[in-house]
Amino acid sequence: MQALPMRSVLVTGANRGLGLELVRQLEEAERPPRYLFAGCRDPESPRALDLRNLAKRFSNIKVLKLDVDDYGNIQECADQIGKILENNGLNLLINNAGVYFGGDLSEVTPETMMKSYRTNAVGPMMVTKALLPALQRAAQLSDELKKAAVINMSSSLGSMELFDNKNEIPLAYRISKAALNMVTKCLANELKPHGILCISLHPGWVKTEMGGEKAPLSKEESVRGILKVLSMLSDKDNGSFLDWRGQRLPW
Image 1 (tube, rainbow, N blue to C red):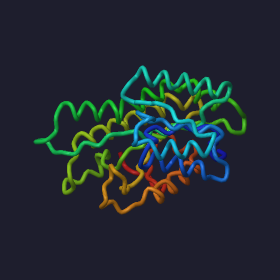
Image 2: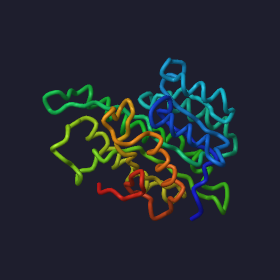
Image 3: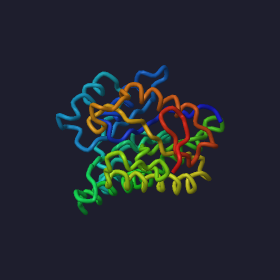
């Protein structure tokens, strides 16, 4: 398989952290996407200022309102992307938006559990469903570049085999990421006949607002690794759980 085409890309949760850095590095690539959609919950908020400023500098960056916990908004955003792309498809969907709630059994609540599940697992599945026609179109456009991909930003904390009870136990986050990994396996199976790959990807423990100051990895280094991994994806990676270095992780 040739390198995954990145002519049109959507990054969710693009207003800060890894999402913003993904948009930045995709734009700085030797061949930046013709269409670079940056979705975030509130594009007009102060938290999206850096993203808005970046979009002012580059006309291919399209900032869109996309709340992955609002299924009506997801479809509206998918319709908007479809109108912009016209007959072009969406080559790459990066489901990056997520929430993190810490806490052990004494602290977890039904609200934090359900919010984590809706945003971290159900949201990516529904975004993928809404954008499936655009992904299918990209996969069918060319005999040479006939692949599209869905990347679900997961975490090693969602791995059952790598579970370490010596670490903090963010129950809601861990469980929602384990659910997201099953979303990846199901989507990989269902989308394979359409020429669409789907993987879970662990970006590492990254120094962001979510990862905290103790994290050993910068967002710049993490994203450089992620984009390198994406450039080398092939059919054998479909349904895999990879990290930012391309190493396979156990479920």
